[in-house]
Image (tube, rainbow, N blue to C red; front, top):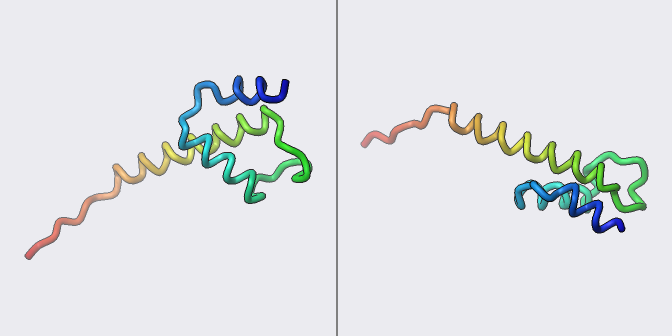
Length: 72
């Protein structure tokens, strides 16, 4: 039953976002109620969504930074 919840929560997620979210849970970087238990599907979904937002912001920022041209 828990697996169905996880799969439903991440069905439309990008693999990179899912991997980043899971790594944050494994490292204990996500603030949850009790780190002794697996996260709920809702907690995983929230973290995946936050990773997506961060990835999109980083990509947007990278496009806005002017590229310095090498002169020689």
